[in-house]
Image 1 (cartoon, rainbow over the protein chains, first blue to last red):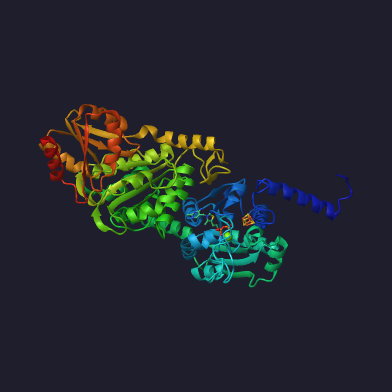
Image 2: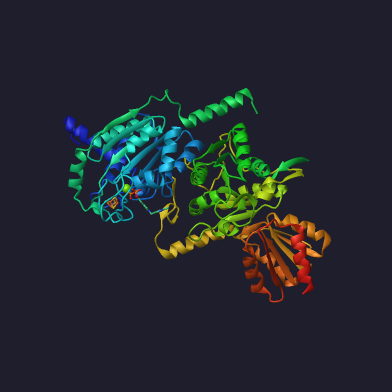
Length: 273
Length: 350
Ligand SMILES: Cc1ncc(C[n+]2csc(CCOP(=O)(O)OP(=O)(O)O)c2C)c(N)n1
Ligand code: SF4
Ligand SMILES: [Mg+2]
């Protein structure tokens, strides 16, 4: 490097390069997602959010564990170079619940598809929200079952044609974020893969939150919808509402695992046997 | 000596063996295990959680085990059915976990308060695919204590799921017993097991668990490699078959597992019979059974179901000796000594 020409641009580039290197230490590339799939954008936002919190000394990589379910979204754990668990379809949340209860020091992140989290795993989702357990749930919402061929999911719009709704979807979709809010999640944000900056910021906030935090990410599946990635992104641009929809301060609702450990400690002190 | 209930003995043994995590969902006739754990686990720094269903219960127990805790769940038929997918998952990921099934009369809701041995095949083969699972049968309160403890040690040693089969009779029975000291799995002050061989989340860096076929965190799709993987999984449990034989030289042998053993114990006092008590159904105590069959004229298999394990007995016995006859006594009533005695006398007459 030339000395004396430490212009802001060079410094910035150097900074970026080292950030890229750090990112590469966290992820095995290339992923096996289809070209143009939105999932990579979500993974990128998540990893950058982690790095930022690590830089700020708010988090250590060795304390992060990602638990995923089954689906294209669930594959995410296959690409990570840090601790992760690829669980069974719909069961990422209860498995993560066991990990978190056994080791409260860990930041346990749960990554799920819309079918994974709201069809087969819907019951676990609302109960995790009700408990307000300290998990960060990131929902890859592509409104269909990507892995199995594009069938309808609980977030598919009415009238949508899919291989399992060839004449148009007769059912009404869930609004994931509203559901999360009502079920008791203490942090809820909703973004799309078009809104990368905001998404990353919300993932940072969700990771820093103590309680059940949900980040719904609307993403596109070019393969099953047979739409161009650019077209899908354009559609996402105008979706509303997109923002932090709920944030309850940590002290207002006690988190489940810390409450459990506090009660156990108190039981030990009073010697009630 | 104290009066102990079978279900309580299971729970007490679990804690003494080092179990520090219980996740479950209430169901008759297993709930006393849950109640015991809910009270006692917090006292020893352990964790109890009531989950939203049995699928979640086993998933949480697996998660806790991945994070280093010796963990368990307990249920009965309907809940056991719900757990099947994750039983295969825990076998594939090689994560130790103990699953207690206090059997009741099925199918479906059946007779929730009646005993049964209808779930034996489900315990041995219930999840999809080929996978190893150790299946242990409890015959009485002392078994509930000693064999449950063994279940935890075997789960640790083989890194595999262990299903403990009790039933409504054994679970709700109270007996005067002296419960000996049992060895605990080494656990630290945070309730974590040592597990030097196992990747533990939170302790070791870059742990990766997946239900996909994999070796050392590397996903496998080559079928030769997959074949080797499955065979390796089976080999882990190869040597743990267990049985007890009483009066093994007798001409008539009563093959028992679980609560039918107690009925057979009454019969052996009044008739010249021997008892083969299978303590594990998976792996099946084949070698010992073959030895007994070589000397006996008949083996009677009493079961509280349509006659299931008798098929395993026939496979082993008929495969090795033609002179020994296998007789099934299958009923959905409680197997009492009279039922067995009647079968012994009938067989002797022909
Ligand atoms: C118990 C069970 N049922 C069905 C499947 C098949 N399956 C795999 S992924 C999937 C749906 C995935 O959809 P989603 O959760 O939205 O994830 P995506 O692929 O869209 O990311 C299904 C039904 C399975 N693996 N396990
Ligand atoms: S099928 Fe759709 S969701 Fe799955 S990887 Fe391809 S583009 Fe992504
Ligand atoms: Mg989907």
